[in-house]
Image 1 (tube, rainbow, N blue to C red):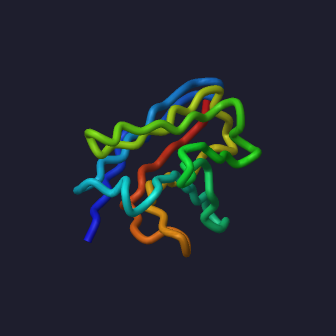
Image 2: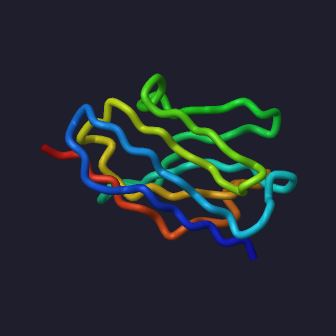
Length: 116
């Protein structure tokens, strides 16, 4: 079973930046694509950013131009650089290993709070 561990969340002021990291327990790049989801209080979990099998990236409209997903396959790591953060970005952020039918494995989540 693949284990995913997120880190890098915290409290940041509006306009600030955070970089989230996700460490996978094994090499999964040949089986899954990686992505980031988030869930705000009282809301459903939503896709933030992900890789496609062709190697391109997809972003939620709300984060385009502000967030960047990247990866280091050799290190089994995936990252989410978040810039120009807004209060509405406050959520628990989850790393996911995604197969054809959707997310297969989840990390435990890391809290991101954007507040002054």
